[in-house]
Length: 248
Image (cartoon, rainbow, N blue to C red; front, side, top):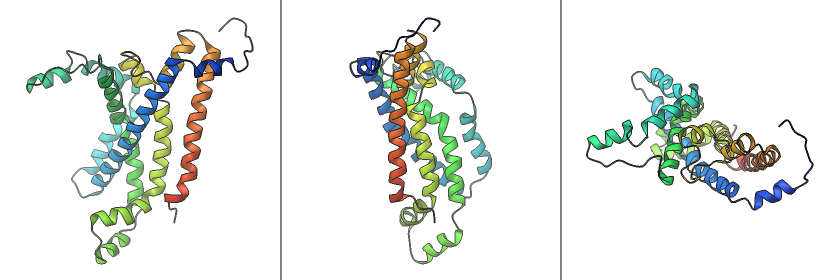
């Protein structure tokens, strides 16, 4: 960081194509995105619709579900790391009902499940609030008219609720995809990228390359590739919104 610099042209990008750790981080992050984004949107939508019903204390429930999104990710991840240790509270609870301990943080598959689960718990509250606002903007007259016409719950959801809430759904999807590709704190604090690089996301690999290995030029190439990946996904979503997002 304090030494001289040397122009390397496209050498760092060529190196990326032959770097198994980088390619592994892309695969891990892609799996994270494919699981996390649909689950986040589905949970957020379901909770928003549930809180729209006349249940007691729904405003307080909204606040409770939003609190994780407002609290620091590093602090939350540190707590969950303690909970999912071999002798942590989660395995102790499982032992109380006769189930054996699960290697949450020492098995690659389970470790990724933990990272995804913690990420869902942390962030769904924000999307729930945004989607709830979209649901509140739907005119009750439209819903009442659909009931008179004989539309059932599934038909009302598919033909009325989804089209009318699609702008909010599009907004949350774009932000969630961008955030998912940049996930860092969860993997860094809970697993450190392990075991066996099974939770090594692109951002975590970028961080280790830059600040552990002091390869700032190579880390900059990783950051540029990550930017291009996010830009491609975002542009694809902007192009695709014309087919399903309704602003009327």
